[in-house]
Amino acid sequence: MFTIDGKPYINLDVHLPLHTLPNIVDATIESYNYIHQNTWQRTWQLNGEEYNCNWRHKDTSLKTAQDFFGLELKNRTVAMMWILDLTTGGYGGNLYDSLETPKDVWDSIKLRTDLPSSWDPMMNWLSDLKCFNKLGRVSLLITRPGIPTAYHRDTGKKDSEFVGHPHRQEFFWLNMTEGKDMYILDDNRNPIKFECRSAFFNHHSWHGSHTCLPFWALSFKIEGIFSQKFRDEAGFGHLDYYYK
Image 1 (spheres, rainbow, N blue to C red):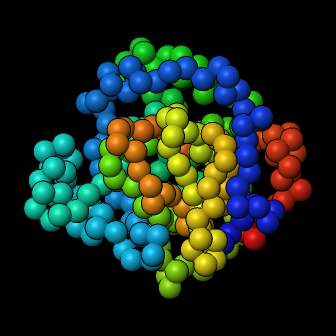
Image 2: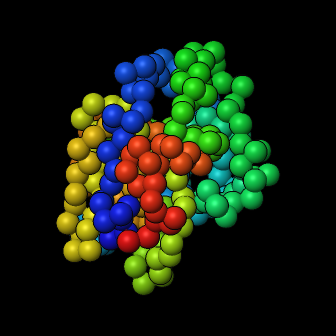
Image 3: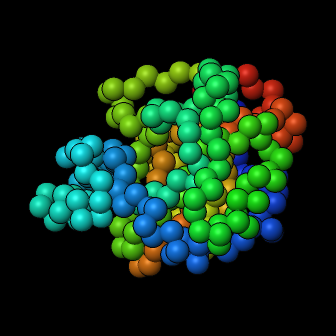
């Protein structure tokens, strides 16, 4: 398991303005036509067996809800999550590094202006965050009812394909739905539950969930370049890189 200073995750609840978070349910509903009703994330079950996710039949020509419905129905696969991007810009890569990603790439990432105005309170909340020197990609993760998110590395690779390395890939996970569980797996694939609403962790480790809710659930992955002040306050400012 890759950690942050030996910890499976860093609880950020006392370091973020969670008490001012707006309700985003109506905004999400009004943004249905902007949602990408699929994710190409490669996933595994808790027991280590690969999940029947849509990744197995990756076809970048698929774009519409009907396309993904047809993919799932024909192939008996599933996308555990839908995605709504709250930002534009960046690049096609899945991982952003505070030290290695070029400045022009970071500068190209902007909050979207084409979403319904019901997103304004959340956009203001994001703009006012003090934890980042630079706000990066913001993704709303929409978990489907009755389907666990399964386990994955954000590298998309399994154990035999991946060698860990030091990095400065910074973000925080933010839960927006009460009852939604999040876990990280130790080296023996034992799940460690997140006992918090917001957290930073090494997303090179296996994370996700083997549990699910009988209704839709929402969470965010909010990326950026953490300020040194925030890193110090959260207890990991002495780390130049995140690895073990």
